[in-house]
Structures are given as structure tokens and as C-alpha cells.
Length: 574
Image (cartoon, rainbow, N blue to C red; front, side, top):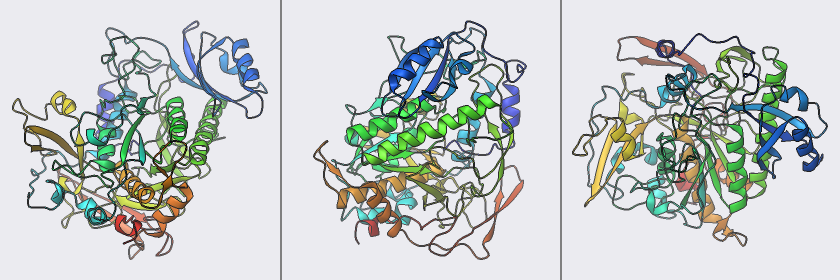
């Protein structure tokens, strides 16, 4: 998941890639520039009235989600927000992006680099200099099963004897995409139902590169196919949920369920409001049973309705995000979708006031830069803090809460293995204590991680072959990896106890029942003793880093583990 604190080296990386001195915060787009906004209609006011208000303010509707009442609007009116925000038919409005192409001499934006650093710093930590992975092939499950300590922690390998999942159960992956051609995903991937709700964004409002030039779309639409993943995050998530048992590589938690790509994330790792809302309502419309959401909606890690540190327009933008996302979550939940989300990688207690210096992380208007804000507990991160959402913290191989995982008594619902490369006897890094899942070959080639013969050149990439078919896997850690394993258990619950879905075919089960079984069968895990737990990490640089997190709550429900560590075997009745 993107929600992480920046490591010490990030500041240097960002500083080195600044294209130009920042413009003053609060400046507006060049007069006449084509700019996009997202406009949320007020419930009960009538869509026609909202559309009239948009047109009167000089806006043209590009698309609209009628279930939520959220429209993407294009306009050259630099005063669009002021012209529409007080209209009785409008609930809220937020900047989306300024339309433009990548300048010929543009460099990668500081925000894009920071996003990449924040996204990968935790998830890929431990990969440099790690010892090469080894495995035995004398296993009863998949060839790389001995590397899947995470499956053993939640007894998923044993659960497969009783319930491997049902192909009539649909699991939607709201992420950066899924490599539908990956040999350890393809058997369970439904391309016909999959959708890409994003449009590649070449540059931000400052004219600096975000996703870069559109390359995968010959029609020039900047829309990638619905079966590619140019980041790798979504493919790892999908594989964790439902890689099949096929004598190749690994198995997912629910190896016979169906994967649906509901792409809501940009190539660069940004997740914006309209694609997330569209993906959630589409999931409800087609009968998706479980969705995994390992991200937060940009540009605000925490959305505050009335934080005095924000301008009036920024407050309006954040209220719009909160309301629109909650409407979409409500819609999906009403239509039978169990909602699972990563708790976050910021190593913070969400039930306490904190300081956030990462937002706003996207320049939707020129000059916008992240700044330090005090975040009271009234602010929320979406979708993880939305209603009906099951929030998942991360555990390491010893079952301790991972050093990076966010936490909070009343925030975390359950825990699940997401890896902790420092969960070792001597607190030094070990890449095999992260989690192993599928990796797109195209990315491994592009990143120089396999040689001309197709063999890995780095210790965090693993190759496995069955006959002439070879596949690649990578080690990652994070609550982004914990959440899909909990989502996989939820899919097993629907497979085991679900009933026929007469609207869409397949199986269905009330999300409240799924949540109840998931929590009720989790392994109760008490707070550590003492509850103030100190993490020690001996970094490869020779430095030692310590941090103390305090667990609050009871043995059966606390801020580190929620109701406990999910258990696939108990969840299916054994």
C-alpha cells in the first residue's frame, strides 16, 4: 500500500529530481487551460439540476457515475469552483487534473518520485543484498510452497483440502492492474468482466511527468488494456488471492476463485476519486463478491472536513472525497460486495492525532506541494476508514505486528501475514521474510532483473518452470500484501457458505455474514507484553533504528491484531 512514511534517503532522491523551483502554493491554472474537476451531486436534488449548474458554470460533462452522482467535468473557466460550489444541486467539487501533454524536456516530477519512493520503500525493503532464495520441490502443494510461510501461518494450505474456492466466486482487485497473461494467474483470470477505469496521465499541472507518454494504446486514448499491469503491485495482490494449484510456482489463498481486474490505479501509483468510485459501483453491478483495496485515494492521505491548515477549497475537496467514496462503498456493500482494505504502512496509530507531511501528493493545480499538517482523529483515510470496510494490519513470520504496519484499537479489524524482513532472530534483513507472489515478466525484463537466458539476476525475483512454461515471482512486504490474504479467506467463506446468485450466476453471501465469519474464526492474538513494543532494525548501512508502538485493547480485540489473525482452515469449518 502507498501509505508509508518516507525513508531518510527519499528527501535526497526527491530533491535531485526537482524540475524547477516550485510556484507559489495557491496559484491557479493558466487562464483558458483545459482543466478537469470531479463534481458530486447533492442527493435528492436531481441530476438534471446538477447538470444545468455545471453547464452554467462553463463545464462540460465527460462522464458521470449515476449510482453515486459523481461527474468528471472539463472546463476552461478558472473560477469554476467558485461558480458552482454553493449551488443547491451540488454537494462538492474537487480538482482532478489540468489537461496537457508531456513537455519535450520535462523531467520526472518530485511528486511522482516521492510517490514511487513512498510506495516501494516499505514493500521492497530488504531486497538489496539479500541471500538468494532456495526451495525444495518435495512438497504436496505447489513447487514454491516452502517459501510461502504466510500460507502456513493462516493454515490456507490445509484449508485447500476442504475448500479451495469456487469459480463462481468473483474477487475484484482494485489496484494498478493485473497481468492476465501470467501463467500463475491466467487460469483464474476473467478478462471479459475486467475493466480499466483509469486514463494514463502524462503530466501534472506543473507540466512534469506523472505516468509518461501513452505507449500501450495505439488509438491514442491513453487507456491501457484491461489485462496488463505496468507497476506489478496489482499482479502481486491478485496472485496472493488466487494463483491456481497447477504444478507451477505458488498457490493463492483461494486457488479456484475467479479474479476480476478493476483497475483504479495509475501506472505511477496514484489512485484518484472517479476511477475508485467507478470500480466500486461496477463491482456491485456485476456481482463481485469480495474486493481488495490496498491503497488510499489521492491527493490526501487523510481527508479533513475542516482542518484550519487547509484552504476553503481544499476542505471542500476533502469533504467531496469522503462523501463520494462512502456512497460508492455503501452501494457496493448493498449489492453484496465484501470490502477489504489494507490498514497502511505508516507505522502510526490511527486513533491518535498525528502529523502528516505527505499530502497533498499530486499537483492538480500549479505549485501544489506536500506540506506538514496536524491530523486530528476526526480526519479519515479513504477507503480504509470508510464504513463497511474490513481493515487489515500486517504480521511477520513470528506473528508479531510488522514494524511498518499502521494500527489502532477500533481501527484494525483483523491481521494477516504481509511480511516483515526484520522479523528475524538478530533483527537484520532477510528477504524471505517478505511474501512471494507473481511478478509480470515484462517488468522483470524492463528492470533488468532477468538475464538474456531468462534467469533472475537479483535475489528478490524467483523463477519456476513447468515444462516449457516459466513464471516469475517477487518478494514484497506491506499491508498491501496482508489485505489480499484476508480477502482470499473471505473468498473461501463465500465459496463454502454462499448460495446461488440468481441475478449474476455463481455464488453470493451477505457481506455482514462474511465479515462475521472472518472475524469470528480469526486466531485471537493478545497485545505483546509489555504492550509498548520496541522494534529494532539493524540496517545494512550499519545504522540501528528503533521505534516503539503501543498496543491497546483486550486479548480478543486490540489495536495490533483486531479480532485476531485470519485463519482459512477455521473459516471453512475445520
